[in-house]
Length: 264
Image (cartoon, rainbow, N blue to C red; front, side, top):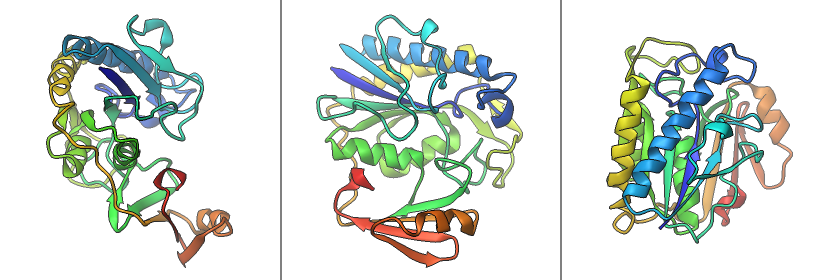
């Protein structure tokens, strides 16, 4: 079976500081990339044990150098590199399932670790009235290709967000926030599994997820699609208001409607 892994960095065990661990010039960025790559390798091992025959991973944490270290990559995994963070490049209907690794919850999530939606200037997104972040967009994007999302790892809030869309998705919690408030990309008290334990949990979870490939249906929104985006400042709405088919809702909010989900 052919598996596509969508990778992010903020949901990795041991990652708690956005500036120092998730920015290219952060002092602990190399450490975070190494931890994320070793989690990917654990996923690959579990998926192979569960019956995967081909595995491709997309480094979704920006352009090069990205959030993964290719030098440490499992030999049975191929990596999509240098494709930026605009979407899982190369994902199509030839894949049997999508796995989400190292994910974070959407902006505004209470008790989440490093929650945000796409970039810090976005306060929230809704598709047909349903709030979504990167998890929902990736799950729905895969669904447009007829591919189900069967696995997610990250903080507890991220796993719960995915299960709200796909109740039977295999979820692995590697850390959780300890403060019942929205902290966004600000460092906050976090309870994390050790990297070694997280990799063990991910390996076992990935193997279990392979048994769900034929039982979980692809998640889709029903067309027509209305994508509403609220920004943190009016200047961001100003920058997008003149784009084709964009409707201005208020000072910080825009909406676009269409029948092609992936083009939105």
